[in-house]
Image (cartoon, rainbow, N blue to C red; front, side, top):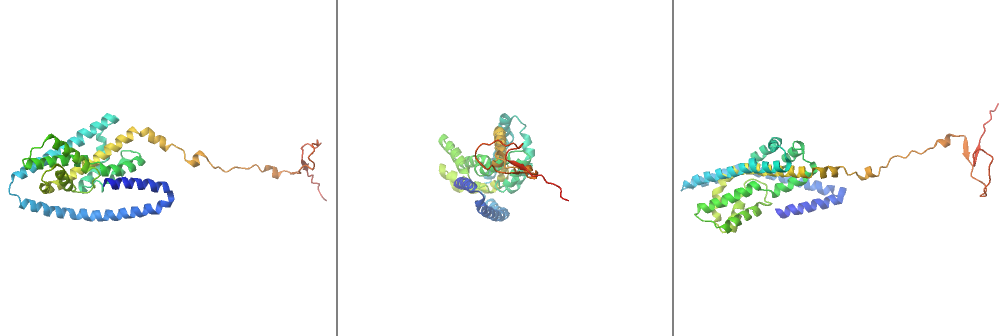
Length: 317
């Protein structure tokens, strides 16, 4: 996924350098993007049905109900961590760097947060997030359209926190005592695996298996988390979108003057205006006509104006 992000960024720069000739290519890519969105919407509609059968299978297969109590504690820990990120960590950073009320951001992007909570996909919420940032938060339009698509794919603060808690939970479920090196490896693996992961619902199970394999823990126990992950994913997506908006708002505040100066750079037509030049043709309306000099020798003419001959029109009977 990270490779796709980098190459998409590079191809976008190249198409921009080509100019108007690349318009057909850009329109073809946009049509392909719209078609892929339709497929993703189909998957999202059938996703609850599949998750229901997965949860039913795990509930019927439970023999130790103490695991249900442990899952409840896991959900409480994840909710507490997400709340600290959303209402303490991000607002404090925003207030320190901008000296503005951070809770106004919640009001301005409430529609984007609601959409993220309903569909649990930061990628599908991106159009609403762009609109809220441009119209309500008043972030520069160029900055929004550059940063938000990138951070939507690479910024997963909520998901990274959930992965660390989930891996530690599975280790405790199997009575495995983690060493300091394993805890550091879990943190680094969570940050790397979630960096560039797809912004679609219920991807935590796949990334959890990768992290468990990387640190040498039993990966088959990741199936236990599928049931609660479908619920937690809605709140994780809200935190991810909120972190993206806070980051873009801070960047816009820090580089606000530079962005304004870039907008004020005159274009080629403004720098070199091509106004219509008005020629003075009033001499054509005069009775005087120009008579070129006959000889090149300097002679003094007695006429009041050198080189001109006045036509005197006499009235005719």
